[in-house]
Length: 103
Image (cartoon, rainbow, N blue to C red; front, side, top):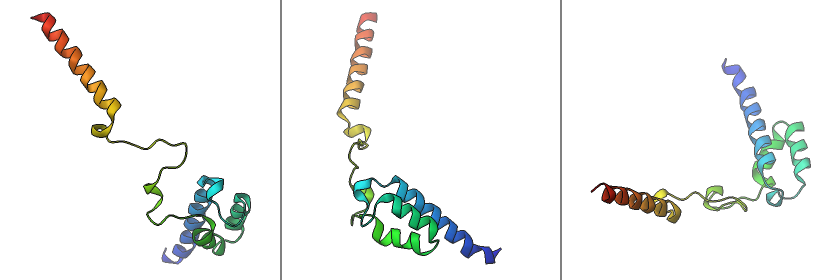
């Protein structure tokens, strides 16, 4: 079983970089068009994925999670979300109004 590990790692690396390349926006791809990167990753099993990881994509020092991609909304915690807090206040006001009507 251990003798298959290098092959499995190469396949896993190729699949990861292939999906990463496909999901990367065109403006973040460096040096070559995205289609060429996909071909390099698929045709050169070890070298292609490694080159993509080091030279194919613009990387930010803090990681991709630090900045939102254009066109995507960032997640806001409920206690920081003004719309959610407003809906809670409205629900509470409705409950208070119903309780006053019962009295």
